[in-house]
Structures are given as C-alpha cells and as structure tokens.
Amino acid sequence: MDRSDSEKTDVLPMFKQEYGRYGRQMLVPEFGISGQLDLRSKRILVVGAGGLGSPAIQYLAGAGIGHITIIDDDTVEESNLHRQTIHAGNVNVPKSESAAEFVGKLNPCISVTPMVVRLSPSNSFSVFEGHDLVLDCTDGPAVRYLINDTAVLSGIPVVSASALKTEGQLSIYNYNGGPCYRCLFPIPPPADAVQTCGDGGIMGPVVGMMGMSQAMEAIKLLTGVYSESFTPFLMLYSAYNFPPWKSVKVRKRQKTCAACGDVPRISRQLIETGQVDYSEFCGSPSQVLLGEEHRITPEEYSKIVSTKHILLDVRERPQFDITSFPRSINIPWSELKHKEELDVQVDGSPVYVVCRYGNDSQNAVDKLQKLGIPSKDIKGGLYAWAKNVDEKFPIY
Amino acid sequence: MQITVEFSGGLETAFDGNKKHVLDVPEGSSVNWLLHHMVETLMPDHKREEGKNIFLQDESVRPGVLVLINDSDWELEGEDQYILQPRDVIIFASTLHGG
Ligand SMILES: [Zn+2]
Image 1: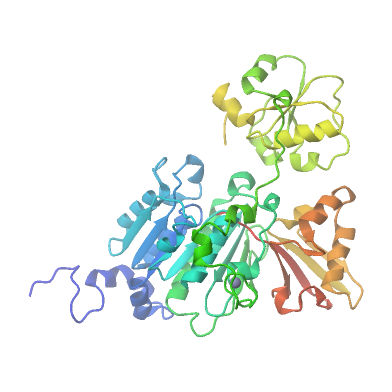
Image 2: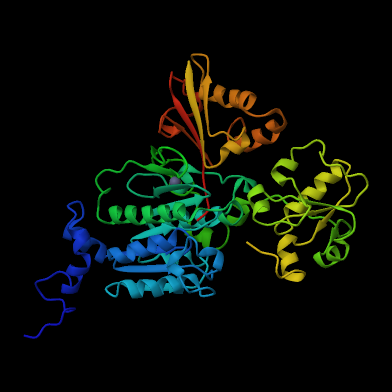
C-alpha cells in the first residue's frame, strides 16, 4: 500500500510527519509522546498579539498545540517591532492576521484562527467557547478583569502575564483551587498608577521572556503537570536585579471573591448587558483640561519661536534625551508636581510648556498657575509639532 | 532587629527611588506598623503626601499592591497583623498591566 508522509495510519496516533517535527521535545522525559498527544488535542485562545502574545504564539505553534485562536484588533506599527518580532515585514497589517500568517508558515500541522476584533463584554463568552486555555497577553486593567470574569464563568484557566520597563509578572488564574485575578486584586489600582509600555517603555527581551514563559506554563498546564497538586504562584522577573527571577506563593481561591467566590456577584448576564462596567471600574487617569486662553497651537508657536521666551519641556528625562527643542528646559511633570517654587529665572518672559502628546503639559500649566507663573500649553505636544509644523522632527 | 524591605513593579518611585532598604525595627512590630513607619522614614518630606496616596489607602496598602512576606502572599501570613521576625524580607509588588 502506498502511504504518503502526511498520512495518519490506524496504528499511529499522529501523522508520521509529526514524529519528525516534534521529536526533540518528545525526547524530554517530562513531556514525552503523551505530552505531544495532549497538546495536539487542545485549543488555546491568545488574547493580544503584542509584546507577550507574539513570542507566546511562536512557541505554542512550534510545540504543536492543536488549534490557536488569536484575537487582536490592533495593526502592526513600526514601534512594535523591537519586541514583536513575529510581525516582521507586516507594518499596517492587523496583528492577529500577521501572527496567524507566521503560524501557518511555521507549522502546517496545526490550525489557527485570527480574529480582527476587540474582546468586549458582548463577545467575550462566544470567543472563549471551545477553548481549553486562555492566555492573557493584553495591556490594560479593564480587559484583564473582563478576561478573568469570562474565564471564571466559562470554567477555563488563564495563564496571565504583564511587563513594563525592565520587569515582568506571570500567574495562573482560575485553576485547580487557585485564585482568580479578582481574588488577588479585588479592586483595581488607581488609574494614575497604571503605566503602559507606550509611556513607561519596555525592553523587548523582558516582555519576550514573559510571553515565552506563558507558553511554557501553558504547555505544563495542558499536559497535566499541575492537575494533581497546584500551588498558586506569582513569578516576578526583574532584568536588572540579581537574581533576576523570583517565584512567590500566593493565596488560594477566595470565598468572598466577586467572580469565583461562594456567592459570586458577577454573572454572564450582568457582563453581557453591560451592567459590569469595566472602564468605569478601572477609571481613567486624572487630566487637567485647560481653557483655550491657556493654549496655543504648534503653528502659532512656530511664529513666535524666535522671540524671547522660555520653553519648558515636562517629559520624563529619557524622553527628553531622545530628542528636544534647542534651549528648552526639562523639568519632568513627575518632579514639577511636587515643587513649591520654580528654580528657573522667568523675569517676565512668556513661558510655554510642551510634552509628548499635550496631556502633562496641561497639568503643568495648571500647576504653574498655582505657583503664580502664567504660561501656555502647546496643543498636542511634540507629536502635533512634528505632524503639523516640522515633519523632520523625530517622533518616537 | 533588622528586616529588609524591597519594592517591585515601580513602587519605589513613591519613596526615594531605591528598590531595597534594610531597616531597624523594634521587636514585636506588626506589618501594619511597618507601613506607617515606611511612610514616616523612607519618603522624602516633599513627596510624603502624594507618596502616601500611592502606597496606602484606607490605612492599608492600596489596591494593586501585593505584600509578600518571605516570598509568600501576606494573605497566608495574617496580612497586616503579621509580627515581624528578625531578617524577614518584605516585598511590596505593584501589579504591572503592560504587554
Ligand atoms: Zn476569584
């Protein structure tokens, strides 16, 4: 009988080609062929194909998870590529499609479904359905609570990670007596304390390491490593510390938890009808909005740029170091807000304040007012300056 | 007796920017006492008011901060009533959300 390489026989549990493809990991005693057969029958949902999702997807696809669903409504930007290497050559392409394209090329033995939509309270339950595990690779508290609640109510465990600057964290939620995200964090942090990778920055290998660790934990969970006994943990990674890794024991499922407790206060119906308001629950950062009389446009500023004035740049130092206006003075907003006087000689010159996007500069003008120094905000910050006045000005 | 306090996830910005402090504390002190002691002794004067708001809420750590006593969630150790022991390491880890 003529038998092609990719034909599964009655006696073999996998296609012959898969023995070759997965041989190196099947040699590992902890994993073995039983681990491979486990992965082969499983379906994973990856929420977010960004800094965490990219490496997680690459390694899960390589390992041979039967099916991967990727949901992300974002498109690839150049500023993503230092860490989201899965998207090579795909600027402006939807991230979920770009990632799925990689999966198709790497491993034709598995299936993949990209979804170019945003996970929301109205679609989360149908998106989660039919998956054995969810990877939380998102970047904000509101969506993290939505993923948690949907996972709890759907009975699906979550491997969750996060990263910022030089640090990362990883946990498994809603699994085998362990906590859910709400058990650990019943109340979200104040919105002002939440930083994104876009403001705070992120080292590529740091978030890459976290995404890859999610892939490893997913493989362990799906092959039953934690099925008999599971000690809930939080993994902490800090690239510039020694030692950089630390794993700590965390609490079990909390009886009083709003999502997974004995008397849950969150239900599918409350989520789908919008009665659990995730954005209100997590809030938004405090922001002064100035009246027009305290603001000028970048175009207006360009006309007075050569007259005598003081330009105060309130971005954080690393941003100021990347690029700045000649003769501008840098006092980061995080420092300015604590000052009781300004150690800059103003002597009657008009003061203009600039930042990256024009948010902190408004906070700063408001603060300067309180210090008795009148000033004006340059609307839209350096971003608007580069867009509307000087297209050579570098934007990062 | 001496204990060590460490910050993870950026909470050191509410203090003086250092991630690690070795503190001398009286025997029998609780973690609750430590929280207020840290505000009084580790925060620069001009930052204390704002720093306190970043660190504490309703007289305990603010939401989004996990307290780890010798690598274990304080929930497993009696939370802020835990009595500090010589050479304890207390980590204040604020959750990250980026990805
Ligand atoms: Zn819970």
